[in-house]
Length: 71
Ligand SMILES: [Zn+2]
Image 1 (tube, rainbow, N blue to C red):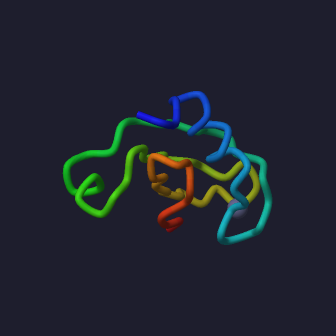
Image 2 (tube, rainbow, N blue to C red; image 1 turned 135 degrees about the vertical axis):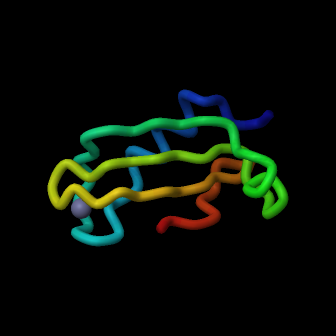
Image 3 (cartoon, protein in one colour; image 1 turned 180 degrees about the vertical axis):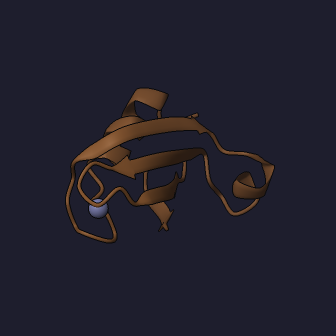
């Protein structure tokens, strides 16, 4: 796997909240992509909770560390 978990977490933390555009994450949990996510090319999946607006955000990274989606 090209991108380590640590790198994936750094990328996740460097992604702004899609709701309020802040970078203050209260919680970041990175795990290996599940089968459904791997089917669309994801290597890592991250669950984040915004520290500003409390939005729950899910993002996926491919094995180059590029964001596949943020939602
Ligand atoms: Zn937010």
